[in-house]
Amino acid sequence: MTFTKRLSFLLSFILPILVVVAEWVGGLTYLLVPITVFVFLPLLDFVLGKDNSNPDESNFLKLQNDFYFRFLTQVWAYLQLAFVIWSVYRIAVYPHSLVEFILFAISVGIVTGGIGITVGHELGHKNMRYEQFLAKMIYMTVCYMHFFIEHNRGHHTNVSTPNDPASSKKNQSFYQFYLQTVFGAYQSAWELETKRLKKLGLSSLHYRNEMIWYLVVTILFLTLMVGFGSMYSFNVIRWDILGFLLLQSLIAFSLLELTNYIEHYGLKRKEIGNGKFEKVLPIHSWNQNYFVSNAFLFHLQRHSDHHANAGRRYQVLRHFEEAPQLPFGYELMILIALFPPLWFQMMNPILESWELKNPLKH
Image 1 (cartoon, rainbow, N blue to C red):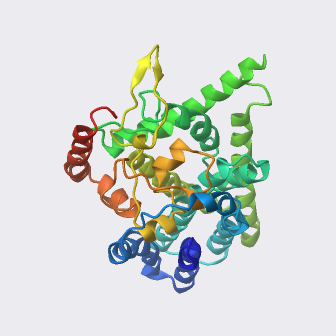
Image 2 (tube, rainbow, N blue to C red):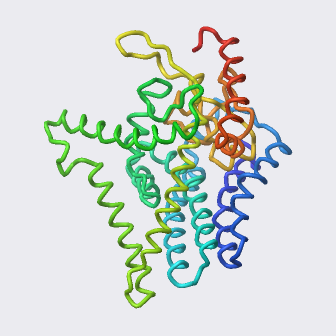
C-alpha cells in the first residue's frame, strides 16, 4: 500500500475539527460540515477518480495485522466519546439560538453517524473483545446499541433475502425502508437474543440478555450526560441536553440506515429450498471505489468483499469487478436516495442492466 493511501485514512478526522471550528464561530458556519461531506467530497471523487487496486496477496497478512490501521479505528472510539461529552458541555455552558442548536446537533450527528458508526461497524466485526467493547461504546453514544447484535448475527446471515430488515427491495423507497429497518432490526435483535438464551435454557428476561443491558447502559449514559450538563446550570435539569443528544442520535442512525438502503438495493440471493439461501457472495452487495470517499469511510464502499469476508480489516478489502457497481460514492448516493423518483430513475436501469448481463447471478 502506498504512503499516500495510508495517509488517506486520516481524512475522516478532519470532520470533528470542522465541527469544533463551527461551534467556535457559530451562526451558519455549521453548514461547513454537511457541505464538506455532501459537496466537497463528491467533487474530490470526480477530480481524483477511482482506486481499483487490490492488496498484494503476498503482503496480505502483514497489511492485515498492521497496527497503524487498527490504531486509527480504536482511537476514534475514544475520540467520539470525548467529542460527544464536549458537545454536551458546549450546549450546557454557551447560549445557542434554535437554528444553531439544530445545526450543531446535525453536525455532531454527521460525525458520530457518518464516521462513528462506520468505525463501530469495523470494530464490531473483529474477534477481539476489546474492539467489540469499543464498537458498543460508539453505538452507545448514538443510542443504537442493538445494531451490534442484529448486524453481526442477523444482517450478515440474512442479507439480500426477504428475512433481512436491513436489505432494501427494488422499487422500495428509502422512507418505506426506514420504517422496516429501524423497527424491524430492533425486533430482530430481541429475537436473536431470545433464541440465544433459549439454547442456554434461560428466559428472554434473564439478566444475561444483552438487549436489556444495552437499554440500561444507553439510559444511564443519557442520564449522566444530562446530569453533567446540569452541573453548569446550578443543578437545574437541562432537558435541552437530552433533546440535543437524541437529535444527533437520530441524524447518526438515519445516516446508517441510508447507507444500508444503498448497499443492497434490489439484490437477491437465490433460494435453494426449505427457506435456505445460497452463500453470501460479492455480487450481493453494491460496490464503489472512488478513492476519496472510500478513504473517508474506511473502505466501507468495498462492501462486496466485506460481506464475503466479514473478518477482513478495512485496509485489505478488495475490489470485485463482477459485483454490481454504484454510479457515485455513498455521500452523493445518500442525497439521491432522499428523492425516491430520482433514485428509481437512476438505479433501476443499472440494476436491470446488471441482472441481464448476469442471468445466473441473481
